[in-house]
Length: 69
Image (cartoon, rainbow, N blue to C red; front, side, top):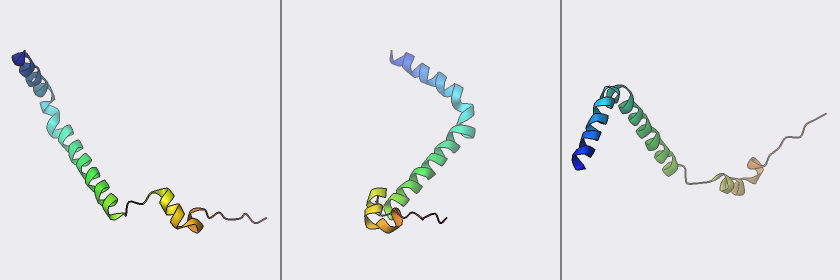
């Protein structure tokens, strides 16, 4: 069973190896950049949700302009 499993993964590796360099690695790099940027924004942003922002700044959050006739 172990040999069949190893052979199966070798076949998969052989079939996707042409795509690794051109598709898989760049996509993984982009995902890593997105995750890193999201973490930086989360850490630097103060962890404030929209409802917390609205509670702190009700005049800005709920401001609506009157339509003048």
